Length: 409
Figure 1 (tube, one colour):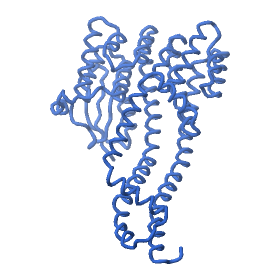
Figure 2: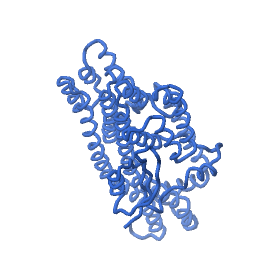
Figure 3: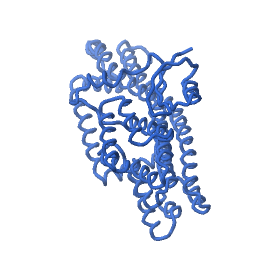
């Protein structure tokens, strides 16, 4: 049975550490709760990270990384756990300073703790940490403070961040295999043209016979690659750099995002990913007391597609005139029809927040299915492409050899 190292908070508010035998991590957490403790962490022995003091000693500030959203999610879950256990906010922050996995997180928590002890609201203290907490996050905390349900709001925030991470990671994981295939295809073409093909050039030159057109093309491509490989590398880097610079301008980004949504397979996937994120953000904000107008303004900042974000802004302006939300959203023709109809039902029944969260769940599942369908098409297509390229090179060499020795093709 595996051994788990755990950290928990006693009813007196003290942090305790220890080890426990249990079949799963969930079993450790349940046993700690049965003992009256509030579990914070439970990690299988052998995978426990070094203590913060040891990690900090080897981390020069010159190379310190920014606080990631994954780290923010962990902190959010732990603060919510401590608050639900009945600890005061400043005491919860004090405990988390000692539990922080890195110096940058610990330093940020110290600043927040000091501001809270100085009389500032948590939302204000978080807002002052530039670049760490999004406007969405701060407004959620502010709504929780106003409603007296900070622990519940932080729990929902942690769940929101975990769901967003799962969606993001599922898309990334699905793209690993196609990326490997693409790199293998490119490497194969380079090796064939730069290494294999040149081995046959002396034979073709000594024969003095005219070569088939396809062989001439392959030999020319190989010669160009060997002579001007540096130009190809520089040209690729220049194109990527100029394209990224161009996409930083609002007009170019808007035009690009609009074209992406019109792509046959990728456009549908991008639209569903954006809709899932938008629906979950809006639903979470509305559930915690943020007005729809303010929620739209905040949710627009979380969207990655500028074309859809512009459509949301237009719907928000129409909402202020009293036209509602669903109808203007439908008129933009930038959002999936199903999601807009669900939003309309939510408006009519007075359950818009729940309907938006349901839409997010539906599109999370749709994204998973869409990724699988896209990969089902992409993987064989890339394999066929690789086969065609390699086959063309081999057949061009074979055709030339047959023509040299006057053998029938």
